[in-house]
Image (cartoon, rainbow, N blue to C red; front, side, top):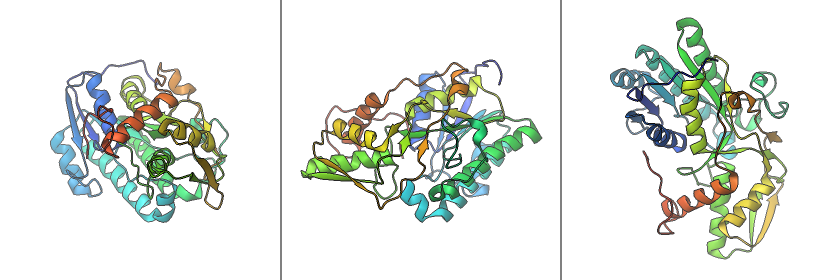
Length: 328
């Protein structure tokens, strides 16, 4: 770790995956921080799974900084059903982007990863828990791919002295999230379920699992702010956790979403469905030592996310918050 080294605000920053949940938030955060030359890369522009296309795009762009927010992502059902796609696509995206960034002489690169820690890691999870135990079986293919990305960053640092870094964000949510019930993560899935139940006057909502697993949730705008901060305040081969350090049970989360949406019926738990990892909350002491902390609490974050959902997904609520930045 080094002392803070501010990046020139006219540095060219390439945000891979700029149309997604994380990438669009990073674009917003960079603009708010005064960066004037931000280039987006969406899947419609370049297929980062194609090595030649990735290298051609990145070398033509010649970025000073790359933020890798490009990935195939999904919830527990999607990961469990399609491990080949989650493994191969993410391996290709990361390897191709790292190789292309190196060829372009990129000085700073930020790689965000998730779900990399062992299923039964000691809680809160420290960064040195990586590779100390078995992974959660329902998303092990994705986790292996993201671990390989961290190893890629460390390898380029060791062999070529690239000042690249990687981070481990906790569960994310916010404007631009995926609300499809077949492929989304738990929080947006709950918003979708409770909203539909409220609109249709349904008496109950069924939630997967027992409701007992504990999860930590970070608003994506907080992650984006952390990304900008770490690019200037962190320089170390070890990954660094990004989260709140606080967790809630799935049952508590479901109740909070119900209150936010205005659903007053019953919440039923389908115990035949998988729970996943019993608990996942990150030890955030390392990033706290750099001077960063999250600003958006879960109650506030749920409310703003639901307002965005009403306008941009459900098509309701004139005057609700709009997502700025790049959208796919």
